[in-house]
Amino acid sequence: MDSLYKMIEYGIYSAAILLILVGLYGALTKKSLIKIVIGLSIVDAGIHLLLVSIGYLKGGTAPIFSPGYEDKADIMVDPIPQALVLTAIVIGFAVTAVALSLVIRLYRHHDTLQIDDIKNLKW
Amino acid sequence: MKNTIVILLLATIGYYLGTIFFGIGFGDAHFANGVKDTYLALTTSELKVANTVTSIVVNFRGFDTLGEVTVLFLAATALGGILYKKRHAVGERTVLFPASSIVKSGAKLIFPAIVLLGAYVFIHGHLSPGGGFQGGTIIATGFLLMLLAYDNFSVNHNVLSFIESFAGIFFVAFGLAGLLISGTFLENFMPVGTMNDLFSGGVIPIIYILVGFKVAAELTGVIYTVLHEKD
Image (cartoon, rainbow over all chains, first blue to last red; front, top):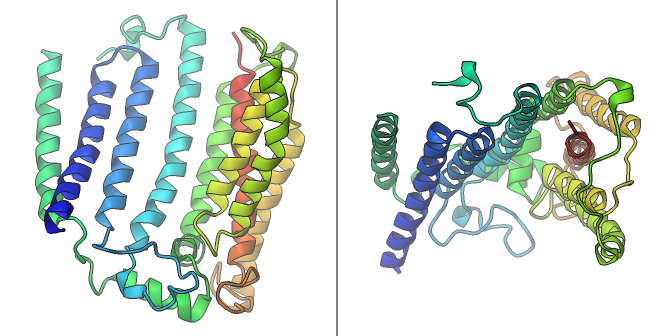
């Protein structure tokens, strides 16, 4: 049982950190604006996974006092990261929507999505 | 050259994130005697709400949620402002190929069920997993399905902004009512009832229903604005 938790720990933290790194790599090296926005969304997903998994408790249940679970408060997982991630998902949606609308605007103005062709966006 | 810098940067970030999080460990009670226990205890004793996440989002951090809803509203408004067009330039949507009749009848069949599921999720936000944000998103996916299936399906923007402003104003009104009656902004001033009843938790279900309406209207507005974008 303990080795199983060890495996899940390594799996879930590695997956989350890998998602963050993949997203950052995409956002930093890709030339297409759409791909940069996708990269930022992947970073978001990695951070959410990391935050939710940090609140986990071994053998815990969801923090919901449904009938039969009214006195099980000591085995409930941490509800605070879940509430924070709920906020973060909504903000992530808002950021992605505004970023994509800016991309549409840039495409309308420059007729291209490659940042190399848009002079003042190059780094 | 640029690739090397990026990979070095990412390796550093990955190394430090890894050492921090593998040091914390997975599934241990590393936040014992933290704010978690207080929230869990107050949720059952004072608020009589089953879902602790809902009680945190709407009650303990209600002011946060008001700010979050404001950010969502700002994003929807900014989207409309950035994709601004003159009124006569708003045309028909560009459709590559029309949806088949299977998609059309299927969408018409399943649309009421999706809206019903969304309403269920946000009405029972204080009893079961889910809540205003989740339910609103489900309803918006129903509208997205209809917009994809029917190229002449349209939603009235005035109705959307009316629902949005109505829900937002009533959210603030409930906060101000708490300020006037109990002395704190967004204080739970209504009787809380018994646990696991539909009518329990005081203002929490009411505020979450308002949030559900607001999120559904805003997301539908965003989808509608982007779909009617053509160059």
